[in-house]
View 1 (tube, rainbow, N blue to C red):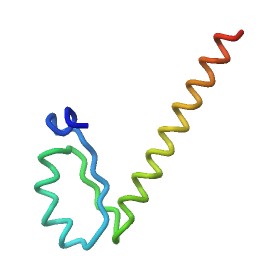
View 2 (cartoon, helix red, strand yellow; view 1 turned 135 degrees about the vertical axis):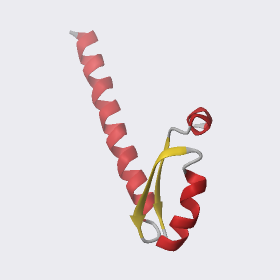
View 3 (tube, rainbow, N blue to C red; view 1 turned 90 degrees about the vertical axis):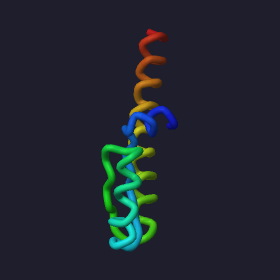
View 4 (cartoon, one colour; view 1 turned 30 degrees about the vertical axis):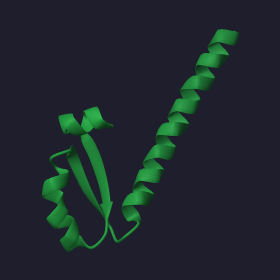
Length: 72
């Protein structure tokens, strides 16, 4: 979020023309400590969706384990 951007802690997964990525990378490093070129247009979004899905699965597992523990 905004706080992470101010602290420079964001991660950017970027897709597009590599020349354009290299031109934008300096600006992105002002907000994020990890800027990754993922390939052609759309690959950055695909990487972000995969990352979000993995995080959601972990959160769901944690919630289910807590619910099970409370019920037992």
